[in-house]
Length: 364
Image (cartoon, rainbow, N blue to C red; front, side):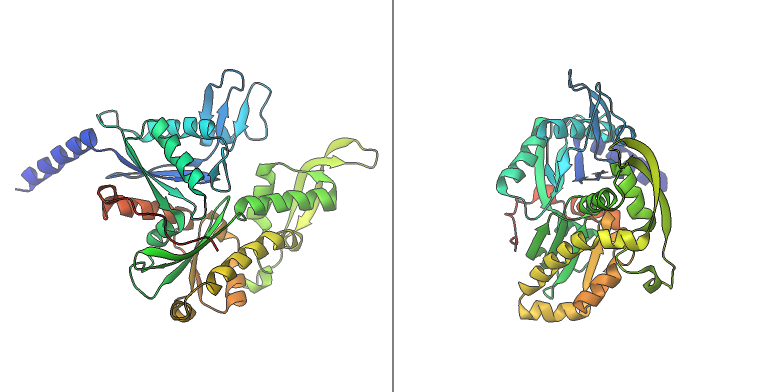
């Protein structure tokens, strides 16, 4: 009997791969993740593409393309095609999406994929249409758009179907998505264009203004990861402040640019990060102010959950807890909450067979 059941599952799985091809994609500013129905997460790579600027030929995408950031020559164009959660270049983004889909597609499948895509909650209808058209252009049979904070809340395991309401703050690369979710829908939301990219840009500006040094994108990201924090390290398990040596292009008094290095500490970088952090805090405050009293009262107990790659900035939960005087917890897998949520929608909710719901919530 067990052998016959195993054979049935194998045959069912084979036919499923031939006739069904459902894919979910978290097309983030920094990283792209792809979930394939029945197989789980099949791709997690940087949202980067390298092309030949003359022939427009795709040279590399994802991990291989990121290695070329900052070292591109005149014969190569290394691009991050997503900015603030939107398509900076729809055509180039389409080529990258096509390459990612080819990486996860089964060679046996006879059907074009049905694709579910996470999008920021606050983007205009024209941008939503551009995302839809981009995926249709690369061969998607149908395209389903899902608001990122709703997917993140589901992926983080929050009780999204209850009437009490739960709060999710998804801090990604290009945008921070803030939402109150109740009864399976977003009831209040806000999207601010300050997140991981803004952190990196703030560090680049600090090095330029205070040390006359130009650093690249990868260097600013390394500084943020190694010594960045939202509160003093002494508030985090009594850790001491951190230091590192940064290399880059130094401008000397004669106006010449030469390779050089300077020492910076975590207090310097924390000061540099204050502006983008305050913008995120302001966005959270506006969302809370828009809440109905009944939901706001519940949040004093349930608090907020922070997720997304940039939520891993040390001490961010401590800072938010002090500012809003409500519980703050980090999602268990912050970089994968959105894709886990999309995967659950495919596997458990079978969302492709449901009518497309209109956009919910509003930008405040």
